[in-house]
Structures are given as C-alpha cells and as structure tokens.
Length: 610
Image (tube, rainbow, N blue to C red; front, side, top):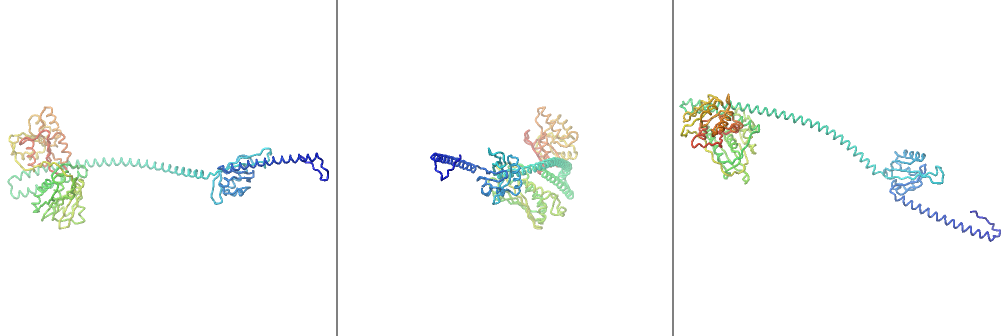
C-alpha cells in the first residue's frame, strides 16, 4: 500500500485527511495481524523447543558446512557443552581426537550429496568422560526458497550408546571367553578321551595283571597243596610208625632215637602248617566264625596243651585271670586259641629258666562289647629295641643266630599279628635283652549267651565195640595202609583193603560194610569219584548211607569242603594219630551207634588251614 505524502504547507483537503485516517487504520490492522502471527510463531517455537528438550535424544540444527544453529538440552547433557559452546563449529571441540577428522569429513560428504548422515563416534566431555553416540541427520529444504545450498539445513539426533557399547564389549569379551572356554573344553575333552583310553588300557592291563596274579596265586596254592600232600603222606608213615614204636619194648638208646625222630616229624608238620597259614592269610582266604564260646575253656585248653613243652624245659607256666571276666563271648575261638598257643609256645622256646605267664584282663566293660587284653610274659633272652618291629614280619627273627640256636621259621609271630589285625585288634611287644619279653594283644568281642557244650578232650582209648564190625580201608599207599592196619590190629574189626576207588566200589556193592576209610588221591579212580558212585548206588538201591571218612593229606579248607560236599561223612587230615582214628570209628560205629545220615564230623588237627 502506497502512502501519499502531503506537504505541511499545503492545505489538507478533507478527502485526503479522511484517506489518511483510513490508511492509518489499515496499517494498524496490518501491524496487529503481524503481531498476532509473530506471537503464534513464537508460541509454536516455544512448544517445539519444549518438545525437543524433553526428548531422550540430543537434537541439533546445522547447515551443510556443519555450523550448528540450535541444540537441545539433551545434546548439552550428552556432550557436556553449553548451547552457546555448541553453536557454529564449537561442537567439534567435543569430538574425540581419533574420530574428529572422520566425522567432519563424513558430514561434508553427506551434505554435498544431500544424503542422510549416519555415524558412530565418541564425545569427550569437559571432565574427560568418553561417551559413545549414534548420530542420524536428515536434510531439510524449506519450500519456496529454491534449491540454493544456503536453503538446505540438517536436523539431526544423537543417542548415548555408551551402555550398549559396554554391553557389546562385554558380550564380545564373553564370546571370546566362551570361545576360549570351548577350545579349552575341546582340548580337555581330547585329553579326557586320551586319559579315558589310557585308563581303559590301564584297566585292561590291570585285568591282565590280576589274572596273571590270580594264576600265579593259584599255581602257588596248587604247589603248596601238592607239597603239603606229599610231605604229609610221608609224615603220616613216619609219625605213625614212631607212635607204634613208642608202645613197643625199647632200650633207652632206642627211645632217645625215637624221640629225635618224633620231634623232627612234629617240627616238619608245624612248618607245613605255618606255611599254609601264612599263604591263606596273604591270599585273603581267611574267614572268621561268629560262634558263642567259653573264654575259660579256650584258656584252659591252651595252657593244657603247652604244659608238656614247658615241663620238658623246666619252665614254670602260670596263668592269671582278672576277676569278672566275661564267661561267654561271640567270635572265632579257634583263631583266638591259635594266637595264644603261638605266643605261649614262642615264649617257652626262648626261655631257658624262670617262667612264662599268661595274663588276661578286660579293659572295656560295656554292655555291648568288651576289649580283652592278653599278655604273655617270659624271662627269656629278650629282644633289642631295633629288632622289635622286624620280628612280626614273615620269615624274620631278631637275629640269624636265633634260628641256629632255637630253630623255627619266623612265621609264628607274623601269623599272630595278621590274625589279630584281621580280628580288628592290635599286637605289640615290650622287651629288653636278657630280661625277657611281654607280647600283648587286644581284641574286642561281643558278649555271648547260651553256653555251648564242652567238648571232652581227646584221649587214647581202646575199642568198646561189642560186636565185630566190617570196615573197608581204601588206601593206595602201602606204608599208610600198613600203619592203619597196625593201629587197628588189636581190635575185633574185620578190615578189607582196596588200592583205588574202582576196587573199593566193586567191593562195596558186593559186601555190607559198617564204615569206609577213603583216601582221596588215588590212581585209576580217586576217592571223590568213588564216594560219589557209592552214594548213587545206595540211593538207587534205597539203602541208608554208610559212613565214609575221607583220609587225606590235603590240609586246605577247600579240600575238606569238597570231600564233605561230594558225600563223605567225615574228614581226617594226615598225619593220623591212633587216638583220633579210634575215636572217629567209635563215633560212627561203636557204642550206641550215634551216627545218622544228617551228622557230619570233621576230625583234624586244629590249625588255620585245616
């Protein structure tokens, strides 16, 4: 609208004045409209700024040269710069030195091509804190302003991705650790597989070794069994003949020689028993019974057995029992008796004069168990301190001169130690050279109930059989056959002989016998087979089983079990004593004929292997 100018000197026409008033009113109206539009625009800008400031991302305006014209509060918070510090190119001061050149170059390249800006870079806050950001900017061309570079601006956002970067770094670190762990696991699996293969190989090798050891142990057992059988067979003749000669009219010199012969045989028998004992223990084949027994009976039996050797040496043998010892115990009386006899016998052997004393006391008097302490003291040669551990080893004695002077193999104490420990006890020695020794052992037992019947001691006796009985003696060894016949020559028994199992079977089926004495190891047919065939024949004929007593030089428990399992009624281990043989025959045929088909007897000298 053009406003006409009027000279002040000219008179103002009325129409012109009215026009002027109209123009002023129009101008006032225009100014009011402009003010209204300005206020509206400012309100819009205020609202826009409020919105941008509450957004969780930084926002900025920049031209194509990278000069900032606006930043929001979130930008300031992320970068640590104020709004004024950020305007123009001030924002570039916040760029990380390593990222600055790249970011500015990327911005210019993007602006030139009018493309969207994408970049990930680091901001360094004034305090030195490094913040990772993700920036996205888009070009905005204002309408009706042409396509001039000056009319192009960018609106961009930055987002703080520091935590995401840390998480990503941690994830990457975890991935690397996981990969390393996986590689390590794979390595360990390979090692584990190798170890498994080696373990399997070792297991298989151990199995081979175990089988070889078992085979060696079986070979050893077979050798010992064979050795024992052969020696016992000969000893049966030697000791049996000595026993027969002892009943004859002999001169003093002949009795002396007979005594030497008998002692040598007994010592050899004792040696065989000890070797079998230690072999059984080392092989782990020892079993312990849990029977009720009388402690008093075991001690009395042991002392009674050792009185004779003590009297022969002129050594006093005494026994002292603590008051209130338990009467009945539960355990293996045979093993306990063996330990006591071994220790007392050992004490007698090494004592020339003085005494040997057995003391028994109860060190634990609870209702559930008692711990018995057995001590065997002597006034013998004693043992030096440095040799006291050695004497419990197999085949060991305190001094080599001891073996030459006193004899023995050094097995007795080793057997005692292992038996005591297998029974859950302990054994030790206290000794001084030339002052004597005290061997002590402690074993716990449970109290027993219901006293067992006391066995009568075996005594030499003559037959009390009123009517003649017929016996079949099956024995291939002529010397042993002659010996048994000599044992029984003053009886009223009618005795047939057979040299092997086949001959015995033929005689048995054609003759009624009251008892069969059956050797086990024989040619043609052994005693096991003969016994089995006899039992089969008796069953087929409906006859009552005839007592069959196995006569064997085998002393191992498995041989005894085998003979009883095959059908033998009893079992005698060679060498056979006359008194044993007489009692066995009377038990099964004499007196009141107490034997029945359910009764099985085992008569053998008491020692571990039998």
